[in-house]
Length: 517
Image (cartoon, rainbow, N blue to C red; front, side):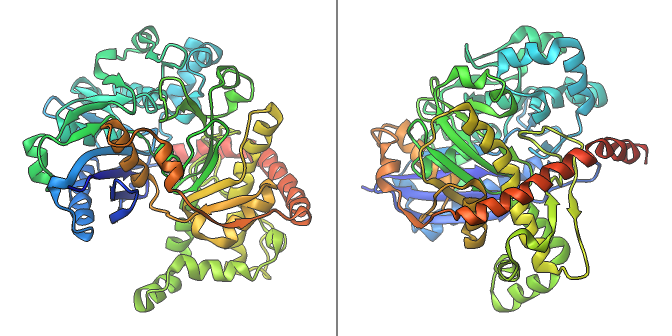
């Protein structure tokens, strides 16, 4: 009898599901985009109830495509993009739309915590910044602005935790998600109940904590009927989606370096250094448990808020012609935009972009920052803007990478690129030259749901360990950086940094004007 495993990832731009077998082969795959609601400045939401409907459809579709018998499915694991928040009542129904990781409405709550609990005190416990808007500040916002909703909260979940609840009836949270909730002590691996209570948050609304690799329950008969699976299938606790992607692409050892260009642009370095995460450089990064030995292993993940989302914005706002060609001929609108960008030289002929379309995370932590196109002239066309946006995302990630290099954290090369915009050879070359490092592409780019499938196999004991990920992965299209290109990019990077410093105060002024409307 075959042994198959299902992985489902709830990202920011959409959800994906995959079925893999015990040889690491992907049997079926399905994807569906989410609607992102940005109806007020700083808000970014999903329809929380849609998560379950979409998950059920994707599981059925991926099994159908793979001709998978439900009796062969031996485990399932879910991941999601974080921070994100789903508030449910005692009947497990969402109380409001879910917050996704681009939401930045709770700026006053962040300020209150800094002023009243102390930014340094919080960091010394959590090893993370408040500016990442952990669910803690969103719960505080709910308490102040929607007290009726807040009073009805049974559990505050992640999107993957919500799906796990629907599958098993159990409200749980994996270690890799806990730092994105906030008030989580990375030394003791427990929530700081004192901090929560000082802000009026009852720790009882947070789910039980478990290792990523732990089986926490089984699929209920009701969930089986909705998904087309069988009741009794083991469910792993889950993982944050970037971990899932990197596990699936073979990042299982200290120093392994991988990057995603999904909705956000990020890279992760696997390590076990508590000293680093509590250091001045660690203070500028995002730090949380890694899936492999999740009680003891960490990953540091510098992140720019709009990575692949920046190109989705350009496609949706200015790529109507390309989308029409895609509709008529089946050629990707993204490929058509990239073809125009390929004709543009390094530096986009003096066009520099700040890609902060929804604020920015590492290393500048500026929720009020917004996008800037600098140097635009009549000689520039659509291809220039597309390339300048690609270059800007590379600059945004490099801004953190250079600091980590200076801190001396172990890094294994090549840098492995995985999901989303990584399919663009042009974008990979830009990143290689900006970072001045060799890079490679994962051949099998199923992404996070593949890593979720591996997690399910490890959690159930069918796979003896995460080493299978390294055995099955294949890296292709290696690239070496050009020293000449890197030197040229560093000149433009200097301009990029200078632009931000010049307009930084204006972002604050603009935010006040937006809020006064």
